[in-house]
Image (cartoon, rainbow, N blue to C red):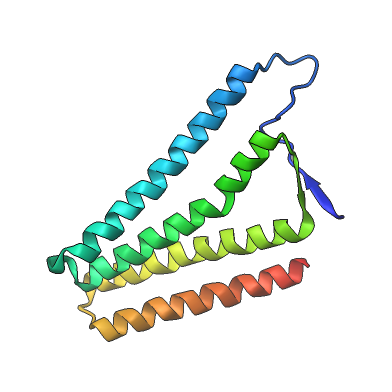
Length: 154
C-alpha cells in the first residue's frame, strides 16, 4: 500500500449527491475557525501564565504543558486536512500517515499522562523538581509507547 484514500468528508460529491461548493466553503471556514480558536486560546493561556509571576506555581506549569500539547495535537491533523480540502486531494502516502499517526497518538498519550499528573498534584503538594521530572517522564513514556506502536505498524 503506497497511499491511503480518505472516504469521509468527500471533496468531490458523487453524482447522486448534491453537495455544492458553498457547502464545501462552509466546512472549510468551520474547521479553520475551530482550529484558529484552539490555537489562539491556548497561546493566550501560555502568554498569561508566562507573564504573570503569581502564576508560576506547579499547577500553572502543568497548564502550560497542557496548552502546548493541545496546540501540537490540533496542529497535527487540521492543517493537512485544510490543505487537502483546498487542493481537492483525497490521498495521503503511507509514510505520512504513519508519521501523523505517531504524533496524534503521542500527544493523546501526553494529554492523558499530564492529566493524571495534574490529578496527583491536586492531592499531594509537589516540588518544582518533581513536577519537571514527572512531565519529562510523561514525554519519554508517551514517545516510547508510540514509537513501539508505529514500528509495529510499519
